[in-house]
Image 1 (cartoon, protein in one colour):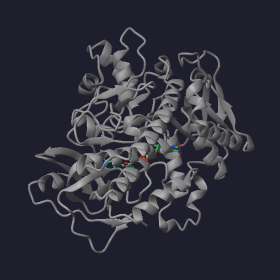
Image 2 (tube, protein in one colour):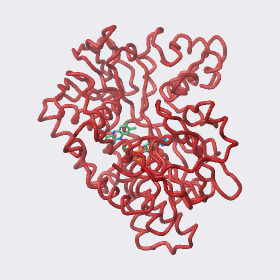
Image 3 (cartoon, protein in one colour):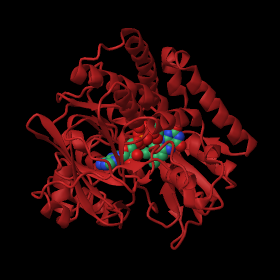
Image 4 (spheres, helix red, strand yellow):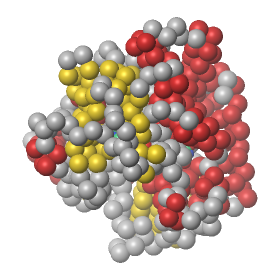
Length: 492
Ligand SMILES: Cc1cc2nc3c(=O)[nH]c(=O)nc-3n(C[C@H](O)[C@H](O)[C@H](O)COP(=O)(O)OP(=O)(O)OC[C@H]3O[C@@H](n4cnc5c(N)ncnc54)[C@H](O)[C@@H]3O)c2cc1C
């Protein structure tokens, strides 16, 4: 998306404000707009497509952006509908707060927070659809701060949006199906991938035969990635983890250890693999700060992240606040698309009395439930084991923003009596930095809860944060001024 020269007059309030222009947000926005609702679609990124359909900026001159994607037609279909719609597209808008304001919602955003011109924007709407996606979950280990260690999803994002590889020889490690997608993209783009290191096994999927049989497209996807790994001679090692990165100024090699069923390293099993980059991630966690601040009910997913509780129509426990895609539990682009449409239909039914198209709704609900069952099976198969803290050395930085080591976190627990992430934060500053605990929150919560017991990894209790993203004081200072009209944008 890019700014248009002539901002249209914005309806005040809109019927619907959609936050997030990935598959879920696009699908919800176009569905509601096609049914006659006035819709504003806000996203922090200037482009539409979200994490999955990230694509190179026009300036890169990329001629085949679809080359690094599967399901590209899902995106082009949504983009076509968006272009034909009356949706006001607000790219580069970082939403920091959503608050009730009488009968409507006030969505507060700041533009240009990545260094451009900062401007506070307020969008009013009768309903809000949260489609804010997910972020990558990281577990610390010795050497994870060495330059050349990147997130697995981050490596994919670098490649899709900037056509850049993190290195020439890239080990891909962590847990979850994203690793296979990342390794096959990196190999197809010319990197050598010596190995994919998966901490879980794949046998866990076999415990969910119904979910597998009902989602054949997922098996096809796995077969495509598996075939790509075979073609590029990438070794897949399961029940293993990178337990050390070697190098000071740059990654030179990693040590890979075998894990027992609880993810404890098996003594003496370490093997060194030479590489110049490591792409690592332990699944995705729903991005739900805006919702938890509003008091929305949450649930713990089978891989121990926190997701929103949603009803059959995708509404949260707070009236007129809907969610679609990853905030309800990580499940992929097609599920996000279906949930977005369901939410769009339900919102149009609530606001304009559109008689929901019963047959279509039932079909979408069936598809959603089928894909959610697979998502739960996938999450259970890759749930982190309780033994991962044994990867940590005393001097391993757990919170990299505030440089807080594992030893300091343990001292806060054993010497000072901290029992949760919040208390550890007060004692050590872990989680107080720029990322606000997104990187270290799960690890710190687990270390805090483990005092004398083997606690599984868990997200810290959802916090009510007034700011979902960093906000300049000037934006707060202008809150009492009449809100400037949102500046609409067009797709590129
Ligand atoms: C780093 C990363 C890489 C991934 N790579 C792959 C992959 O290679 N293959 C695969 O199958 N799946 C991948 N996934 C998962 C896949 O992206 C999702 O399953 C799919 O995109 C879900 O769609 P969505 O619409 O729910 O969320 P997303 O596509 O993530 O869209 C969410 C949108 O919300 C916006 N947003 C979030 N918070 C705010 C805010 N406060 N203000 C304004 N905008 C906001 C974001 O900018 C984003 O555009 C990846 C996920 C991540 C996090």
